[in-house]
Image 1 (spheres, rainbow, N blue to C red):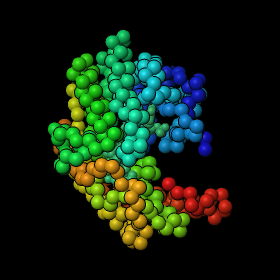
Image 2: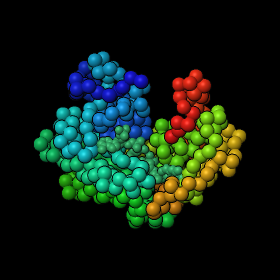
Image 3: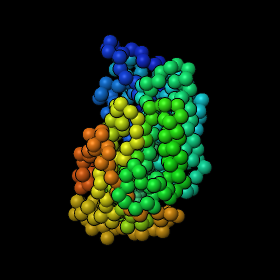
Image 4: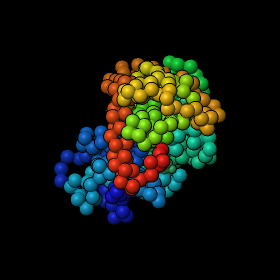
Length: 369
Ligand code: NDP
Ligand code: GDR
């Protein structure tokens, strides 16, 4: 597959637009992730010029945004531009903010897997907590040197910060994080509040509950399940190994949630908002709906594997998003069953394509997420 990744020549900023109306400029960290791809589509459709920071990897990591990418040599059409940077590298963050002159900065980059954060805690803290601090510092110093005080910053906060505190969870609910990831998100949350209070930066925390989509990473439980449903349905797999089925989550659709991020940056004053569907379902309910949708029984396929249990679990998350609904006028459009069906439909199609490759001898059927 062709890479959408930038080359060094791709750093021309704000060039080539044939329109005379000034485009707003957004800078997104984590643009190659699930949310980054939906936010990019959303902002492009609003007429923004979008700059994304991507990290160097030995394999292309731009699959989720390849469909949006236009070769930068086609200046008039290429309004998404990619640059190499890393949240662990303060110099790269400063360089791009100073060069791009963004109006809005969305910090979506993270080592975002809760279970993995127990295995690589230092790295998780470095990216999730200190990475947010580095980016805020880059914004602060950019404002100090250029006077561009209208720049706005969005921090991708998480319902994991509430952790053990029982639902419903709202903006004033105390945090009780249960993993290195969640503790790091709490630090990033408070760095954001602190830079708002100390320097007057327009900085917002979006406290988003779980949001999923067909683009969700394949080792998060929803996508792991829908991938398995598709593969089991076409005969590529028979078992699905999972951990705790009793945990409950407030699952929404990622496409709906990126609109809330943008809305937070369009208000007169910066603030923090919970974004949630206000419905909670257990992993077992997700299994029931997804397997049932294609006429399968989950009990025939799911095997419990202790490996997927976490050292500390978050049992029950259910948000109270009344502030976002009232102040931002936001509400989710996609409900739980519709979300599950959307993901299963896409993953059945994906499995059918895999089956063609397996039958032709181009792919090993055992190769699974
Ligand atoms: P993903 O895991 O899909 O994407 C994470 C992104 O961060 C990827 O683009 C990844 O790059 C990038 N990244 C990871 N490490 C670094 C680094 N050191 N420097 C620069 N970029 C890095 O996450 P989501 O899109 O699901 O989530 C977006 C944000 O929202 C995350 O911060 C997450 O913690 C938070 N969040 C997510 C929720 C959800 O339910 N999805 C709920 C609440 C908060 P690469 O592609 O190269 O790996
Ligand atoms: P979460 O999402 O931890 O809520 O973090 P995940 O889908 O990983 O887990 C949800 C629940 O499912 C249980 N579970 C399993 N989880 C995974 N990944 N794999 C399994 O096999 C499995 N079996 C059971 C988990 O124990 C858990 O209770 C997501 C991430 O996107 C974070 O970045 C984000 O901040 C939060 O959502 C809100």
